[in-house]
View 1 (cartoon, rainbow, N blue to C red):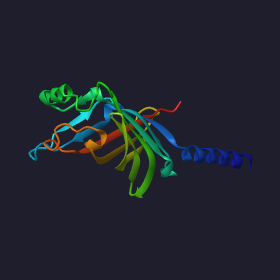
View 2: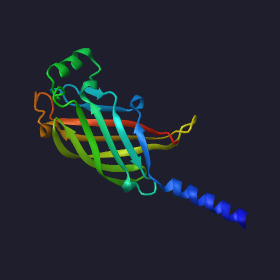
View 3: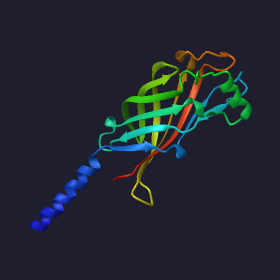
View 4: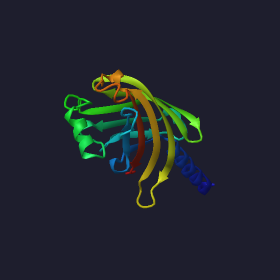
Length: 191
């Protein structure tokens, strides 16, 4: 009986441990936040922001209780071309000198089934706060093969009008609509 109670207590503690939300720190080396736009109808250039940081809190038993916060340094902007990167920084299109970071902070996470989510939140860009909605797919949640860390990976996307944030330069030659693609990996190392 004593052994049975010990096993039951162990099982209950593992169930409770699995039920708790897990906080993951964004791994900048495995995270890519890409933006793209249309140029005169001819092409769709893109750029990325390096060194994303933030947290993902994921509750597998109550996905609606999950959350995400991502901060992007404007100084990390890279357009995959020296000429385009220099052009974006020279004209300071995102006003990085005055607003060195952009932030997304979720306000609601809705499970859509089949590992899909709708994530609503505030995007802070150039001192303006607007609500945006991301569609996301969870790639994987689980332990890494080596060590004690666990991780979560997801892809997400959204579009928004940059003029809503006061970023109006070169419209309509450069599209008002911006597409954002996020490939995110975050890790949690238990004590």
